[in-house]
Image (cartoon, rainbow, N blue to C red; front, side, top):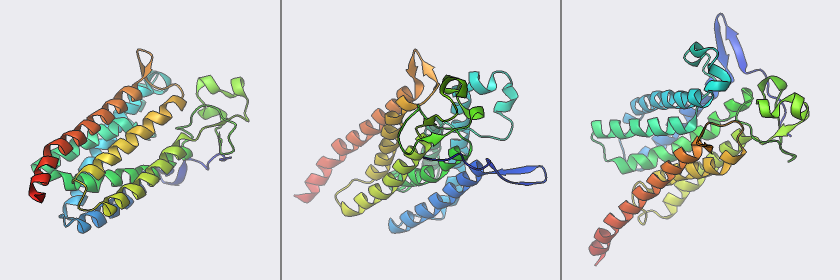
Length: 274
């Protein structure tokens, strides 16, 4: 069983509160940066572009992730006090929103910097999964990103103040345990960050540039789609969880891009081999 976490505030320095959520996000960024530098060197790309690019993409992803979360949780958390949506502490991000705006930022800066895109896609894709694997533990400290009740041995304890209305202590009792969705996403991200680059190395010379990065986006999309049914009180449109629509769309676009690349480039490669 996963116990209740320590306080979400790591330490306080005067008026400044340093929270586990923000710290783990920063650690995830740092590890992702080192991961990208290593991959860029291996692929002989200009690693000096990474820091500036990562800052721009991170800001875009934070903005998109925050917007998605605020819309998702508006009725529960922000309708009574709208200013809390834009004032610190920022303790909620929606990964689908961050993925979309971060991807848009990546496309824009690659075009602006006149970089060949697909090698950078392969560098950035697995790095996103690395960051996801680390940053998701911030959700544990905030007692969020938990799912439906479960009797599984790794069920997550959530105190009464942080429970959704449908699973309140009055309804289920204080001893109820829940699916640790943050842990599932973290483990999936770690697995993808290890498996996809290793696959790229094993298939070196036989895999088109960009396929590893596209695979990382597809990996996260499938993870999110698989777990969405366990989420509580999620944002819905027409009775359907919005994440199904958003991440389903992301997955279809990713597969379409991969298919088009295979169809348009494979005949050229075949001609060269004759």
